[in-house]
Image (tube, rainbow, N blue to C red; front, side, top):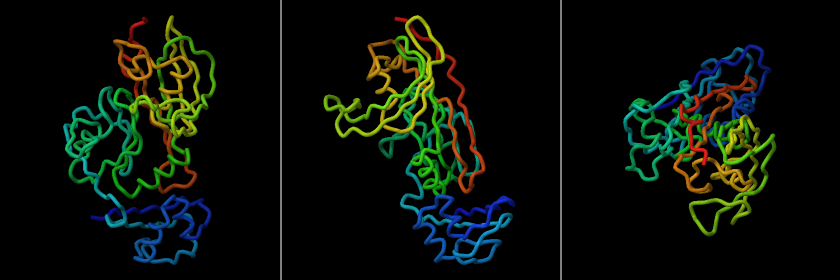
Length: 296
C-alpha cells in the first residue's frame, strides 16, 4: 500500500525551493529526507533537486509508504457505523459529531463501542484510518477531528501544537457568570484523586481559556469558550475553580441528575498541503436537549 498525493500549486504562488516548500507544508524532516533519497517527490512527474524552485501552477507528487510511519495502521476494531454523523469529509480529513456517552477511543485493543470503533466501520476496510487528532471527554458532544491516512497526521499535529486549529465550545454552567474574560491559572494533577485535575495541582502546566457569556437563566449561564491550550479537563477545571462548574459535571460539579452540558461547537483548521489558502470552518449542531436541564 502507498499513499500518493498530486498537489498543483496555485498559479499565483511565489517560487520556493522544493525543500522549503515541503517544510512549509509542515512535513517532518525525516519524511523530507526519505522522500528525497528515494525520489518519491516529483515535480511535473520528474525528479527535481531539493534546492531547485517550484513555480506556481506546477504539480508536486508525493508518495508515502507504510514504512515512513511508526504506526501506519491503527489497531482499531470496526463496530457499527449506525451512530456516525459526518460533519465534514475529504480524502484526508474527517470531522464527526460525537454523541454524548460515547468514549472517543478504546483504551484496550479489544474494546468496542467507542467513537473510533464506529468511525472505523464507517470508513471500511479500504481505509487505513481513522487516526484521532482531538479528543472529547465521554459526556462531551460535538466536533471531533480525525485523519483518514497517516501522511497528514504529523501535519495536523503540528497545526494543533502551533495553535492553528481553533476549538470553540458551548457550555451551560452553574450560577451567573458575566461578561467575557480569560482564565489563566495553570493546571496539574489532583494528588487526592487520580481521575481529576486541579488549578495549581501537581506538575501544573500553563492553561489558557477564553470565555464570553451568551445567555442567562435563573441559576445558569450559557457560555462560549475557546482554548489556547489543551490540558486534560481544562474547561471543566477552570470553570469549577471560578465557582461556575459545568452543569452535570460528575467530577467537578455538585451532585446532579443532569448529564454534562459541554459541546464542541466549532472547529477551524487549515488544510494539509496548502500555504495561506484560508481556513476550513466546521460547525456541529447543538444537541436537542442541550438547554433542557433541572434548575436546582
